[in-house]
Image 1 (cartoon, rainbow, N blue to C red):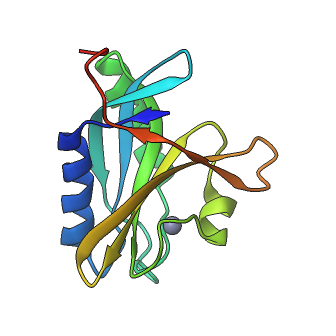
Image 2 (cartoon, rainbow, N blue to C red):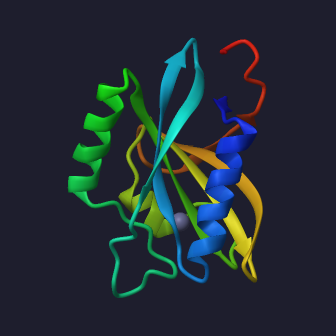
Image 3 (cartoon, rainbow, N blue to C red):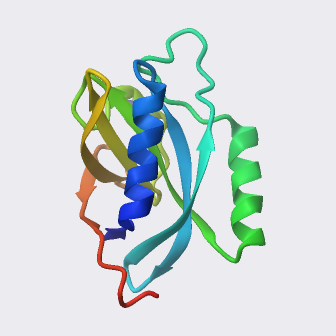
Length: 144
Ligand SMILES: [Zn+2]
C-alpha cells in the first residue's frame, strides 16, 4: 500500500499536465512501516531523455544521489518514483521494466489530451520479470 495525500496526488497530476505531451518524472520521499509506505514529499526531476522525451522516462544517476541526500536530510527515505504516460495507460512499458529497480514504488499517471486521468502504482518483482500492482491509499489520518 502506498499512501499519497490528495495534495501530493494533485501535485503529481499538475506536473504531468504541465509536461504534456512529454513525460514528467519525479521522486517520492517518505517513510515505510509494516508494509505501508507514506509519501511525504515530492522532488520534481527533469526528464533526461532528449531524443524521445515523449515516451522514455529515465532518471539520471546524479538525480538519484541528489534525491537520496535530500531525503536523508529530511529524515525520509527515497521510496519511489513517479512519471506520466502521455496518451497511454498507466501501465509500465518494457522500457520502464528494463530501467526500474526492485523495491521502489513506481507511480504512473496517464495523461489523455493534456488531462491527467488514472494513476497506478507498481512494484518490480525481485527477479525483474514483471511489475505487480500496488494499491494507492489516501487515508493519512493514522500517520499525522
Ligand atoms: Zn513509463
